[in-house]
Amino acid sequence: MHRSTIHVFHRLNDHLLDMPNLYFCQPHAKNQGMLRAVLSVNECEAFVRHHPAIYVGEDFPRLGKDAAGAGDFAVIRFQPEETTAAWRPGYYRVDSDLNKLNDSLLALSR
Image 1 (cartoon, rainbow, N blue to C red):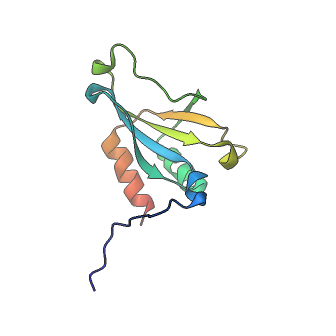
Image 2 (cartoon, helix red, strand yellow; image 1 turned 30 degrees about the vertical axis):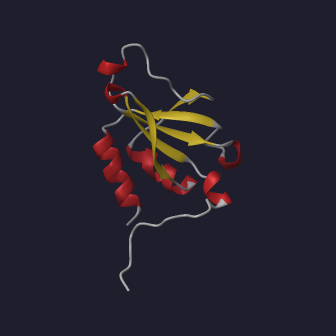
């Protein structure tokens, strides 16, 4: 039997909803945000050691009128259930190259 690295979830586990979500945003492509990863709080903390995150509030950042010229960025979302002393509910912006962010995500999975 051939093993696949792609998993299909027929029902999303409730515990996945309580984990930080990481979105990639590409304003030049008018991409408001695509879910890239679901992280544990520990994975999120390891991730932001290399890519600092800035709290931007309780609303997902919107693309501005000059979005075509804006750089790519990532957004981390924390639900109230997953907050700690270091993380409050809401959204955090990560201004870093998406390829470097992706490399960091791949390193977390090893």
